[in-house]
Image (tube, rainbow, N blue to C red; front, side, top):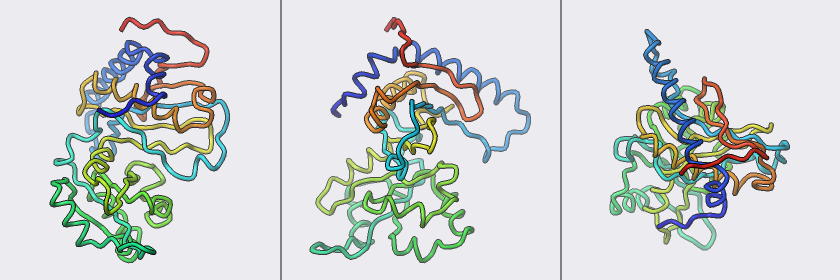
Length: 267
């Protein structure tokens, strides 16, 4: 069983599940009505994710906004790793005093552990073969999930560019890929995580649920867990946090936590 961090414990105390559940149910009803009213939906333009919107008291220092933070969830946002095409980007740069991580080694390890990765791409190949906007778009559209070696995390915005990072929809999730590490556990955690990229303002969002793919209680679980994970990585933790809201990309934001406002929980 995974250890529960202090942020998640406090989020359970500060954010009542019944308040989260009411907000989730309201949003799902709104989304269902919107989908039924839309006569000619364009599937590629539909954003089915529920977002946890956090508002900080102050604009975060730039040190907090340079790279995304991995937020653990209890339930994956994807139907299953097996049914979601995935791409793993490995760091094949020569390393002092250690063996270079080759495609052959990574491919053999992935297959021997039964990890459902669709394709492995070396960092060197990513840099050489995906320079044009068109090639990056093709890569972006080929997979639902992208995972990448944690050691190259800060290099990827420059390499993948605005195709991946402007709308922040498929930013690669960082995973620890040491030769002697537990790749299976790391990649499973990657599939069951969301990314928080703190903005240059006070408001940021992190995905916590998906319409049509998750049950209400699964989304509620994710909201509580994500709130705890967020608090652990934002400046000053709970002290620096002003509020939490839930929303779809194009919906109203429903409050589930506001600083100084007490909620009475029934569950």
